[in-house]
Image 1 (tube, helix red, strand yellow):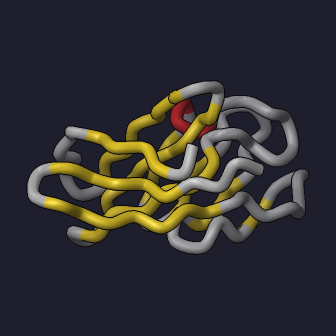
Image 2 (cartoon, one colour):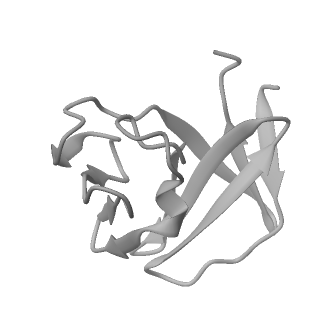
Length: 102
């Protein structure tokens, strides 16, 4: 599954969780730019899309770990492990997320 195609238009500061063929992806829009990363917390394996987005960081709803949505970097919290990020492009009204099979 190399790509996920989304027909959604997020407002700035919004996020959605996407699940396709067992792959969980968090899609966010910050200052007009789209970012995508794994929707699974590297510590507790819960959906980050159930947490809160503030600025460029998403907070895990379980233990409060924070991740930078642009880079996947763990900013604070118990995991200390970064989250995988994916390349995002736009074609007309479609958002295309390039994901790995790994």
